[in-house]
Length: 42
Image 1: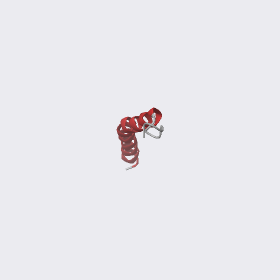
Image 2 (image 1 turned 135 degrees about the horizontal axis):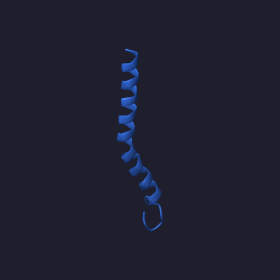
Image 3 (image 1 turned 90 degrees about the vertical axis):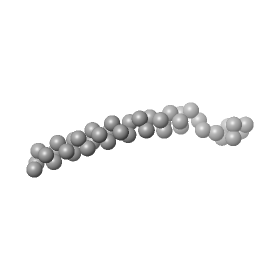
Image 4 (image 1 turned 90 degrees about the horizontal axis):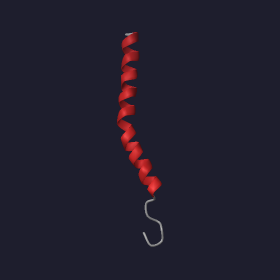
């Protein structure tokens, strides 16, 4: 793979790492927003 350049590229690894890092905070903010919205209307 390394000889013909078909291995993982650095940009691909960076994108995967950023996706893993941002998933938890975005999910927490989204769930908190839904909680506050539902709490306001109920």
